[in-house]
Length: 569
Image (cartoon, rainbow, N blue to C red; front, side, top):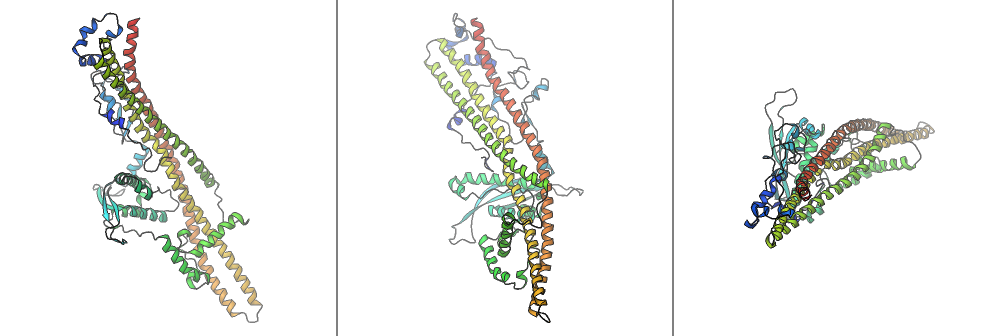
C-alpha cells in the first residue's frame, strides 16, 4: 500500500549514475552515421568505407531526410531544432502536463512537447483559498528545556512555516498579500489536529502525518526530517484548501501567531482518566452538580476520559442497542446516509486495490527503464571493444551501429524514468483519496457517537421518570407523605431538568454533525469526479506522449537498419 507521505519510493540503482554521466550526441539521429564516421580512426574514413566492395556494412545509408511534420522529430519543429537533447531534458513535474499533439498543430513553430499550465481541479481549489503560499522549510534541531530530566538530553526539530495570505476579504479593498513566518514543532501539529477534530465534528478533516517514532529511529535522520517536512507542507495545504477548515481560527493562529502556539494542548489520557476517577464517587452517590450532565460536555464525545460514568452509560447503551433486542427511542433512519456510508466502504476497498496495482505499474515501468539503461551500457562497452579490438573496417562500422542502438536504449531509459515520474504524479491521487477515507470514517464516527449520546440521555430520562413514579407511589401510601422521599423526588426532578437541557444540546449537536456529513459527502463527490477525471486524462496523455517519443527513438534506428535490407535486395 502506498504510504501517506511517500506514495512511490524508489532507490536509485548505481547504474543510473553511470547513465546520467553519459554525454549523448546532440546531432539529429538521421545524421548519426556521419557523426560516428568522424569519430572513427582515419582508416575508417568515408573514402575507405566507400571502397569496401559489396559488403553491405561498408555502405552507410544515405542521410535520411525528414520533413518538419515527420514523426521522427515528434515536436513538429524543423530538423535543425530537433535534437537528442529534446529527449533528455526532463520537464518540471510540479506544473506540467505532457501534450505531444498540441505543438504539432501549431504550424512550423516548435513549442516543445511539454506545455506548462496549471488548471487542475486542485489548483482551482488552491486559488479559492485565503492562502497564496504555504512553505515548510529550514528544519532546525533544538534542545528540550522543559520536562527533561537530563539537561540537553532531549532534542526536537522545528520547522519554519512561511505563509502568504490575501490581505482583504471579498468585497474589501485589496492592499496586497501579507506574509507570516513562524516556527512550529511536530507536537504543535498534533495540537492543531486535536483542536480541529473537537471544533469541526462531522467534517472530512485531512488526516495529519503519523508520528512514526520507530521509523525515525530506523531511517537516516536527514531523510526522516525531509519526509516529515514534505508531509507537513502537504497536510497544511490540504487544510487550507478545505472550504471550512481553511478559514478556521485554529489554522490561522497556527500559521500566523508568533512564538509559542497559543492553542490549548491536549491533556494526556492518564491525566484525563485520573480526573474522571476523582469525579466518579460523587457521580455515583449523586452529590451535587457532579451527578448531573453538563450541557457543554455532551457536545464532545465521552471517550475523552474525564467522565467515566458517562463512558460506562454509553457503553451500556451500545451493548443494549446491539444485543438487548429493544429498539432505542432515536435511531439512524437516514436511508440516503446509510447508502452513502456503504458506498464509501466499497470505494475504500476499490481504492485499495487500485492503489496496489498503481504501485505494481510504477515498479514495472521502473524495472523496464533500468533494464533498458543497463542494456544500453552493455552495448556501449561492446562498442568500445569492437572499436579498439576490431581488425576489419566492417567491425568498426558495426561498432558504430551498435553505439547507435546503445544510445537509443539509454534515451529510452531516461524517457521511461520521466514517464514514471509523471505516472507517480497522476496516480498518487488514488492514494490521497485512500488516505482521506480515514477522515470519512472519523466523521461518520462523530455522527454515531453523537447519536449514542442522545440515546443514552433519553434512556437516562426514562429511568429518572420511572424512579420518580415509584417514589411518589411509595410516598402516597404514607399518611402525610414521606418527607425524605419527597425531597429525593425534587432532587430527581432537578436532575431531569439538567438532563433535558443536555439532551437538547446533544440533539442539536447531532443534527449539526448530520448536516456537516451531508455537505461533506456532496463536496467529496464533486471533487472526486473532477480529480479522477484529471488523473485519468493526465495519465493517458502521458502514456501516449511518452510512448510516441520512445517509439520515435527506436523508429530512427529501425529505419537505418531496414536500409541495409533494402540495399541488399
